[in-house]
Structure formats: structure tokens, C-alpha cells
Length: 112
Image 1 (spheres, rainbow, N blue to C red):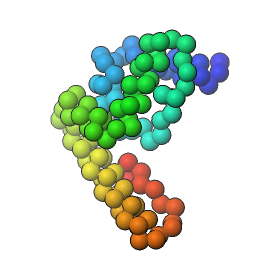
Image 2: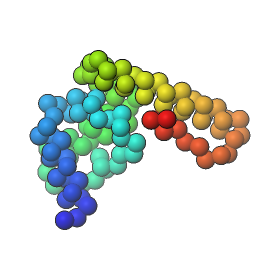
Image 3: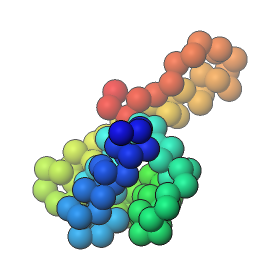
Image 4: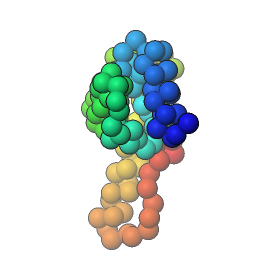
């Protein structure tokens, strides 16, 4: 089984388990650090459309936030907000360091 076959199998499971792509992104998107599966060409149009939309949501601060606020509740929403807040605080700190000429290769992680 190729790496792509393994990915397609996992994606089919995501599609089957999710009410909609936005809800899946809300529940799982904050745990995704790197995502490039939306750039792969899929023979199944449903999988291709699903992955394209998932990538759009993950690559947009506003879309992911909107999905989380719509679909998450209680501790799950509280956790998402905390992770977002911490990530963007670290990102701002990283950008300030770069602007000040700090060339250390520090990149913020969402869980830090």
C-alpha cells in the first residue's frame, strides 16, 4: 500500500465519521501543524473536494476560528481558544524578534 493509499483510506474514514468538513476541521484542525494533503491530486472527486476545503479552513485563521466557535462547546471550545491565543501570542513574539534582527530559527508551535 502506497503512502497516498494510506492517506486516502484515512480521509475516507474522516469523511464517513464527520457530519461536515467544517465540524471535522473544528474538532481536529488545531492539532494539525503541517498540512499538504490538499495539494495531492485524488481520483475520487468527493475526496478531492473534501481535502481542498479542509486545506482552505486550516490555512485561514478566520475560517478555522469560525468553525471552532460554531461547532465546539465547553472544555473543547475553551481548549481551542487557549491554544489559539497562545499560538498567536508566540507568533507575534517570533515576528517581533525577526523584525529586530534576531536570526535564531525559532518558530512557534501551536501547543507551546
